[in-house]
Length: 618
Image 1 (cartoon, rainbow, N blue to C red):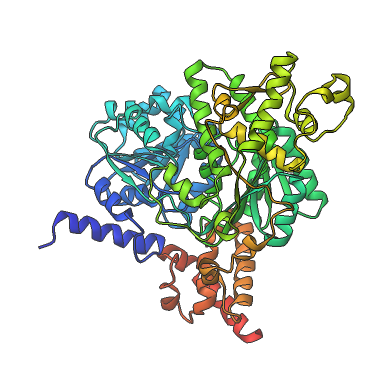
Image 2 (image 1 turned 120 degrees about the vertical axis):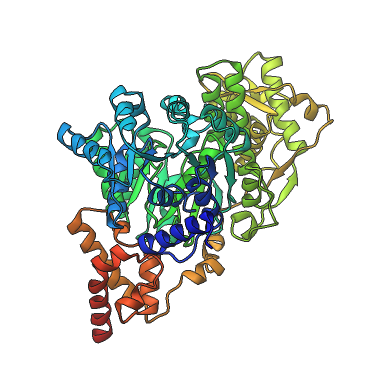
């Protein structure tokens, strides 16, 4: 006799194979699906690319009724629906982009039970008409995507999410599943409280993304450094470049374009139609680079983003992890690259000091920044430190981050720290003057600049006592003292001031170990190390490489004809397997991972024709 649980599992596996084209679940996907299908509430933390969507899509297909997905990603709902429609799933959305007729058609389909999934923006649930519509239909489950948006300590707070506790109050018998890729234990607890999911079962996957190589480099000429990365390691690859300001986004996009890299800007200062057009081009075209503020990226389901680069310091580890997680969703080798310098620390500290909110809020922001700075300054495995931040014990060095591939040196910087702090002390206490890092370094290096001589600072006892270090090394000293809270910045001009803990170093009660600044830009040894086990597994056999390119060309034409992103047709990983296996029949093609029934019926003959032509022409 088959138990109800076995039947649900069988149904879920059948849907996985028939609709999505996969033979087996990954990680704890099956546990989540079984729990939600049985009517349980769940809070799911799973890294980007880990298969979160299946955790609510399959239960929505197995349970009676319509799965209602609450998502903040209005601009991407059409693409999400297109991707499901391509799989044969009946999906629709309701948001402000629909005209009245289109909205009525979706509502009628919902009420008639002709939808499997319905996507809603969170603000829609504040509408009486939407709530009344849901009351009249049969709801299979509620999925709250990007659930970290409910946390005011998260990196992407959305006030509309605070009202989502009403789902349980109004529909107490409908299971709810909240999903996010990024949350510390504190953020997870806040999500559970605010969404009234304290009784839900928690599923927390590993935060490790082993295919992503994390690299943080000293910032010198960041745009030129970025261009070298793209030319040397990612020519023709799709990627995202994050900048802090709109002006930097525009200048960086112009710089890349002028140097032969196809790049588009994206920020809130552009009109909505331009942003939408750039987003659609990025999703639909191969090899485009999107230069953006952090306003771009959440929910971007483009699997072949090969790199994410930051030209400015992220405000938190959560934000950094979320943004870098947009690389390599297909599991293939990808790069997370960050250029980081002294001015980043000064700028972020100033932003905190001038931020709105009370002292407790600023302390919270400072804690987030301190953790990000610690990740940048660490001399140990970056991946291990990243995982430990999210409460996941590391199992040792990863072998695929810059500190593992090219281990940095550390040195006892106590005396250098004392010299720098003494300079700040003498300027402040003896002259009642405050200056920025550059001026303090000029004093230490004995430079009689116009400003140094104007203020008579060449008569200070600290003038010229720092000749043992280069300017870049002194900037590193300042940066690391700021990172450790042994030095602070204040005012619009970023002047340096001592902190309560500076006296511990000046009084020789505390030593300071520092990361040594490289004399020249880091070699590309870390980049070349992509010929690792992960990269090797991604290499195609020589005979399959041209077939893969033919399949990509076919896919690009099909996607253009249908007006959908290429990945809606097939992911690169699926095309790679097709090129390698060279199936000769529909039955053989159906066994390729990612080829479900609907796609087999729609594209099977076309793919076999491409393979046959490749075999004939060579």
